[in-house]
Amino acid sequence: MKLEELIKECCKQKIAAQAEVYQLFSGKLFAVCLKYSRNYQDAEDTLQDSFLTIFDKIKQYQNKGSFEGWLKRITINTALQKYRKKEPSSIESKEVEAIDLEEDDFEDSNFDLNFLLELIQKLPDRYRLVFNLYILDDYSHKEIAEMLKISEGTSKSNLSRARQILKKQIEVHQQKKSKCNERTEKHRQIISR
Image (cartoon, rainbow, N blue to C red; front, side, top):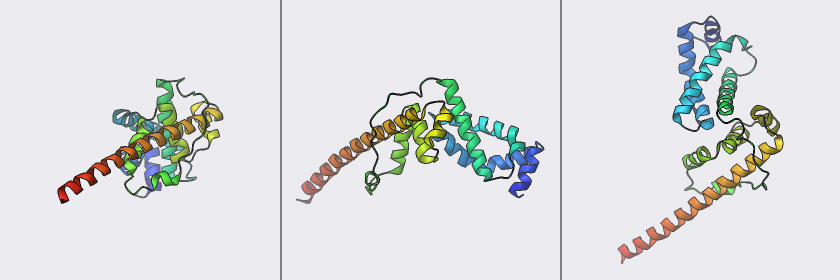
């Protein structure tokens, strides 16, 4: 069934069409949920809530723009609503000096993208949300401020702080790796004698 037909059938609350839309998009939307959730269980809950909202509001989709983009926007909004309900005032932070992550920080061939994603997941919520929205999902600070009900300055500050934390964690990781490589080389030399 074509996507347009699926959407029409979902508007009629047809369970088979809803199941097919879920099958088609749940994987990608779950990845979005993981970015904005603290853990796997929260991400699963967010995904389910997102699909409830999607099927409730599917008649509002007007075939303008990408359907997947519309789904993603609902999913992000659902995740942010869940976060605001859980911790309504914890997004605010103090201003900090901006420190940018340079592309060179990621050029190390030993650098593991999964490790970076783990680091992002470990960021405090207020930093992780802004980092994901700005860096990974291309929202502006103005849009983020509106979505999270914070000032643009706080959005910029939280992004800067997230970058600081990530940069420091990457440096620590690279130092540990360097020491490990030095020990491995010494062991090779001893064995080679």
